[in-house]
View 1 (cartoon, rainbow, N blue to C red):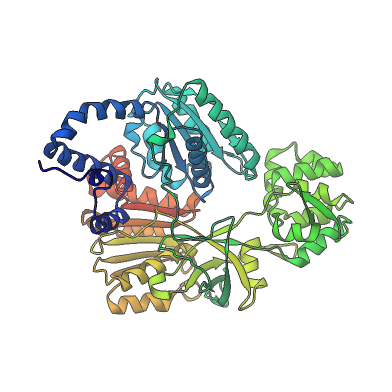
View 2: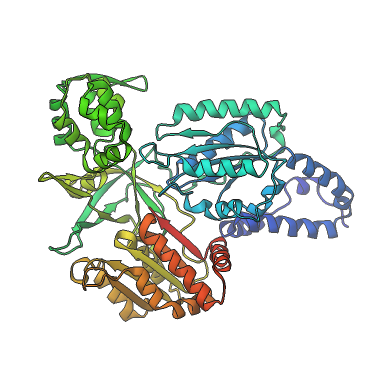
Length: 604
């Protein structure tokens, strides 16, 4: 072997080769990175006698490092668990801990038996279910195939919303099962509500102390402090939003429709925002001034009052406008208001869970206070409220098509109670309160678990009801701009053909052009017997199976509790019937499609 410049060993690649590696990096998964690492090591091992001599030393060192690795799994639905995982990763690195940060969607769950230290930060969605990206891991852990985990030390941070009955249920389920498999707690599971900052900080400190006790440490000079989730393009974040302008607000349901659905376009030309089909738009909304005035009057609170929020003094009106949720009532709010006012009806109601559930669903906050007004202090009032959180909407445009715009499809939430119409906080803000050219604070929530196939020749089946059709509009715009040759089939359901066929002209244009191969429609209220999207899927079961055999990617977007569950059951029956499998085998088949990113869901 010829002599080499010693500096080449320190920095052995030319700029041209580095550029080639960067191009490869953009399109690789974590699993592919690992494979490439082994592939190149093997080549080096064959060609370099000096590296051969050092191979055993390297292997021993690698084993030593692996025994000290703390795997952090992020299982996120709206981005909160992902953000906390990133923060924990940096915190542990800064305290000389060797970590491996990974999304649950990319985690090789069959390797869990080899883990020594595992931290799971997980949110709960739907009816106590794990987030979409953690479903494969969840199914494996809960199955008979799950390995014994006697050597595992773990901790779970569970994120949830206490206004739901199954608070933090996904985290509870994982904790119980890992314990059954032999895992030992580094730190007891912590369940946190939407106001989680103080709890998280305390938990992370206690976790570090627990890791120190079991002597998990490693010199920071021996590993890269990298963050696999960092978005290198978008500077704006949930806590540092960009400002966009409303340029279009168009109702796209008919005059007689029971739904008020808006197509909203935003101008982002003054920001550095980049997004991909499948991503969501986060919107920080403001509460209605009239609603705020009514609440203050009913509670005899002066609009000039100053309250304290996280050690900051804020005017009560500004606080209610920007910092607190005012449109959704919860059981906790009812209980807290009952304690402050000592109202007999509300106090009695809190002892009857079913009646309390029904009351909360049918009685907005303003109605409860209107029925039982009481003079309380401004600080007492805000102390019973939930913090305002941004709303996420599936993006219904491709940047390749619309450039400096973002389009979303918004269903306006309306409740008619005692002759009074109550609007949802974010949907009412976007559809009714904002005018053209008004500013709105936004950010991009990436969704790498709802992506078009990288192969433009791959067929796709898109299934959605109501505003669940939104991301498919972005998919079709992207496929059109990419000149993709793969077949495209949309299943769409809504109540009425004449009133609720969202983006009808655009789908007809794509059909005529040949980009859209098929569109199958289910109108539930256009005939005496209701026809839902799952009925149409069952009707076309054999054709769907043929598409699956042709390596089609399947997407579902819409309601998690109803439509998505019914559609999945129908797909399992199709796989079982036409693939000659029992129900257990069809479940495994569908889960394998999920692992291969050929079965993806965006449900809410």
